[in-house]
Image (cartoon, rainbow, N blue to C red; front, side):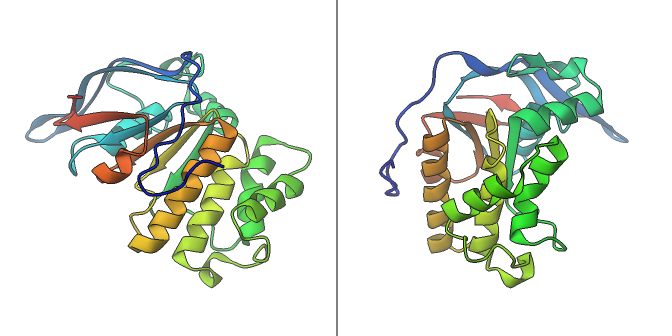
Length: 237
């Protein structure tokens, strides 16, 4: 288990092989007042097993970039290659299959289904993928995040920190190639948020998953091995 102190930077498990390759990426939307450029000319690669923070002010294009990297949105120009697959060549069903096989998500607002228990929430991506055994891995992952006694609790019966732990278990249970975390502590108090981040980095280290963390917090970003800074839709650092 890695040092999980606030200043610890995870040791590299990156192989040098790119799991994400972005070339000439742009996103524009048409408004009544004219064209709005959200992202323009973004180029970078992320090695397998790396940890990368995407930082920038509110409205700089961070969340749009994450959506494009995960195939949740399509670019106006350029390409995103995720684990060898160019997402723009796929339709929505094809991109959904890639996400199910290769991507995990952790969101600021947890995104748990309120009508499902913690266990059922974590089992869901395995069931959607068609795995024969969803319960065993889901139970193991919830135990790993310290919720082995809360399997049958619904999200409304869990604290914010516990809900985010369920979200972490759900994100890692499929053993994704890439985990996207979008402001994962935004709805948590400082102490709870720190505990969740320590757990996120420990799980990332143990599994070797590539971590892409979107945050406005430079201190949190410093725990990643690399930082990509977006300003006005452009990559500036």
